[in-house]
Length: 420
Image 1 (tube, rainbow, N blue to C red):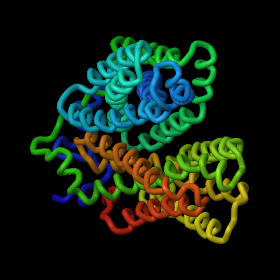
Image 2: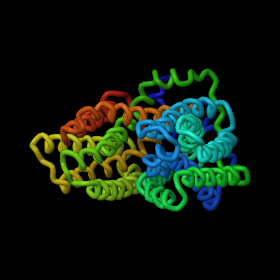
Image 3: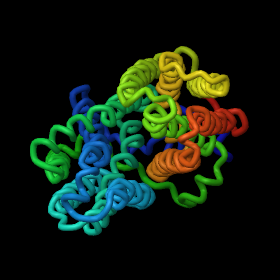
């Protein structure tokens, strides 16, 4: 039976790959247990994200401290991203075969050890190599979090929980660099790695004691085709591609705006700070509204509506740029629509991708996150040669990717809604 014929939220049967296996949650957890488990999952993902953002302010000082060039110092960031991409695929595979609670705890411990190793690096090359390994271990939480949250809350409450997860994660890139600046002044570049290592080690110890609060891994269905089967599944691709292209378009814009604002627009980095604060706030409002919007209008309408809204905002911004517009107030106003649109559709879109992947949710989550990273990296590289020309090339790439997100929803088949 094709996956598009399955109901999205069906009665629990072991043969239906779209619902968690009964072993996933042997009993209904209390609200306190759910909150503790959710906090553990969120903290694990935030530590992985902080591996980039907390270290970011220290990068310019690395050549003086370790030798080498500023170009080599940038590989400290790129190496972590490369390791994360590899780790997503590895943990996606391992999560479909072994106990995810054990894998998450072990990954946190290894992430802590590589963080401490990074703080003791004696040269730039050594640090870059360690960062690749560190990024791989830091990817586990991103792979396991969506499936764990779905099993923890059930389909009826998972969208709201993913909205809260996304809201908290969105604050990390905004706040972690500020903390990183303070740590750099306090104890030099090594202190950021020590703090990350200490936090990861603490979480690993908490996992060892309270890891049983997390749901067990669902049993892997026999005959699973792994990553290739998911990549051939048009229903899964509908949600995976639309999620990757939607968030990817936003990240492409964010990654390029500092250069545009300080270059052709001559508005300075203070404008970017304002843009980020307003954008993150709009995203949080959208993500907080996602669950109630799904209950009222349905998941498919919310996902499509949010995607079309962010696409329309980028297209409007592109037309504004072609007309010679450069007012920061107009850019921020349209960016609010982009962030609210993604915040509205993001939790529901990721949840549907997890549902569409069936019992293979670890591999499915890995592919979605990898798609986001790949889209952001590819779009940023595509816009980079033209970034000095102004706002239009950057927004043009972001708008193109956003149109691809809308096309994914309009052209690919959807999960059938529960009609019961």
